Amino acid sequence: MKKIQKFIVIIISMSFLLWGCGRSPNSTFYTLSPLPNTPLEKGSYVVGVGPVSIADYLNQPSLVVRVNEQQLRLDEFHRWAGPLRDNVKDVLIMNLQVLLHSQSIISYPSRDMRRVPLQLIVRIEEFDTDLQGVSRLRASWQLYRRPSQKLLFANSKVFYEKVEGTLTPGHGVAAMNRNLNKLTQYLAQDIRQHGRS
Image (cartoon, rainbow, N blue to C red; front, side, top):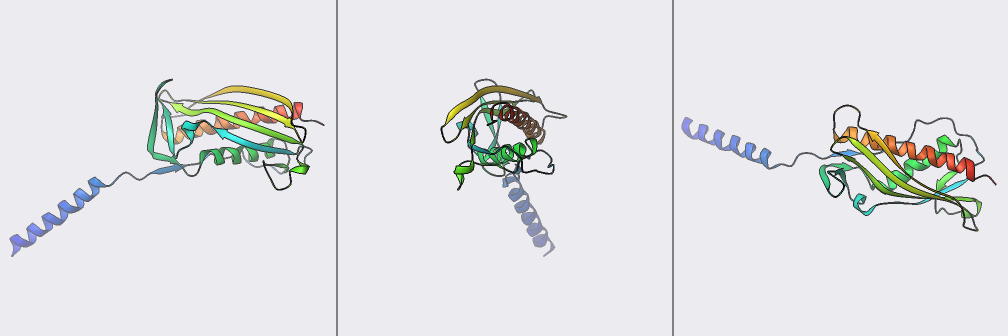
């Protein structure tokens, strides 16, 4: 009887071991965050932000690691908490609200576009971190006067940030976040210089 009980315990233990080995690691989810909030005023800038587009290779849930200029790797167990394009657009809008001290930085299109005199279009062409711990953001943007759709300004730039500390997915996302904040500072500067009536 004792031999049978011992045998059953061994079988159950092996079953748990095999079940544990067969399980995939838990996924970790990330999101980009805006600049710290400051009290908003009813600023003079009224801007519709959008469309905001990202490169096709970024339109999937996994974080992308750049192996070299021609090779990318998907990290299937480290993912974005939601669509990256939407996250980027939300952060750009919130950052511009802070930097321009205006509650009137809104998503384009919106229900009432008649009161939006400026439209900012943003294209993210590269947005990732490489194996050396360098995050790169390549973006282009245009500022238009509405409703005439007159182009007021166009610009493009590449931003770099070094990962702080050990090279981990979380530190890589933090470096990407700093690059996105840099981009927003340039957008705010261009709106101030070229968006006046």
